[in-house]
Image (tube, rainbow, N blue to C red; front, side, top):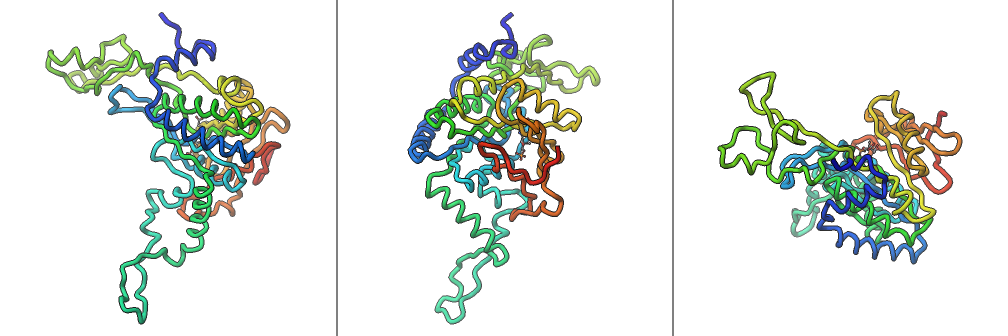
Length: 363
Ligand code: PAZ
């Protein structure tokens, strides 16, 4: 039996993994856009950050109806991208399609429809056509909206923000590898800020079924095409023992996704660049241990740990140098509501070469 990707040396796992999957259709277009974007900023000697954001999916079928998703709305990535832009970086924003984006995130939250920020313009007294049907931003939102609009326009006009979407974990891996290699001319002006929630488990392509997995019996002539096997196979549907005669249960056997952070740090990324990764946990007892282990394993520069329940106002920085562990907290009084009514994130774009300026620290 062939060894699992997770058991191979990183370089071998890379070649097996990337040979197994066809590159995403959008990759050549994304590469062309990124190449031009990077060239522009290399010429200007500007720092460029690759921000990854949102969760990756693991499809269960090749013609995908069902998939496993990873938690992430994209708030961390989109918010941090805005801070990086404010600090003068150009940002490649590699994000899960339809997750939150820099600037528009203020108005795209489902509980804050952008239409609620608008009104019909009041009639103009004395004008020939008093009601011309125009719409305006409501008075109470004018200042904040103008501020966001100006920043957004500035980023767009000056070519500071490149938006590249992904959906599946395979697409994410291809995009990450390509972007990192394209960023080589940036040398130490390149920063990787990996906030995306990347799937840990997947179904290798050679074990994936083509068609939608069926939950009920099919006529015999279809059985061979439904392609979901019997017990012992990687994915199978079988009797629900708890309730014989009821609908079939689905059993999925997932493999670990190869950890390519090693390859990013040691191979793909430019020499002298900085790599920051995130670690999400739900158990407070595990967070620091897991973040430290990641830093030791991949020998990069910084792991930012956060707990699902407190991630919006508390993170821990784990670094190779003293103080090794530094907590950053937004004090209660400053957990202000952003324009969208969503509590703003810990502002993490204070990350520069030379460290971060924490909001509040406790070692
Ligand atoms: O996107 P979001 O703001 O809802 O969540 C951000 C986050 C928790 C996904 C991010 O901060 C993070 O920890 N990313 C790494 C996840 C992981 O351990 O794979």
